[in-house]
Amino acid sequence: GNSMVHELDTVVITRDLPECGLVAGDIGVVAHLYADTHRVEVEFVSGEGATIAVETLSVDDVRPVGAREILHARPLESA
Image (tube, rainbow, N blue to C red; front, top):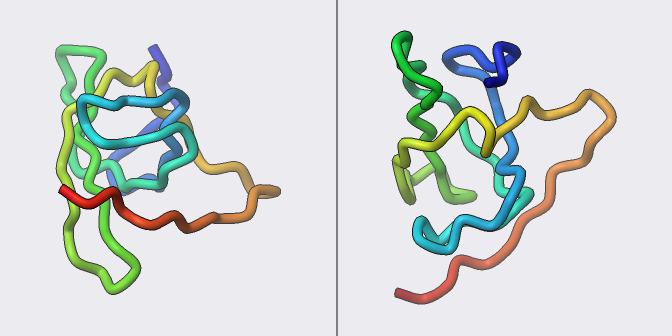
């Protein structure tokens, strides 16, 4: 597991998660860390701050944003 992730951390998806509509590099915020499992609840918001999704992911699917990384935007896929 990744013990480096904490609640309210900004995290990066490390692989494509098509079942969630997410791709590697998408940015979210850890809304909840499940103490007894290796899972985190991550909230994803649009550029205007609307919640797009809240997904429960494995800690292995996310990592902290690095200090030397630039954020990147992409259009949402239409439903």
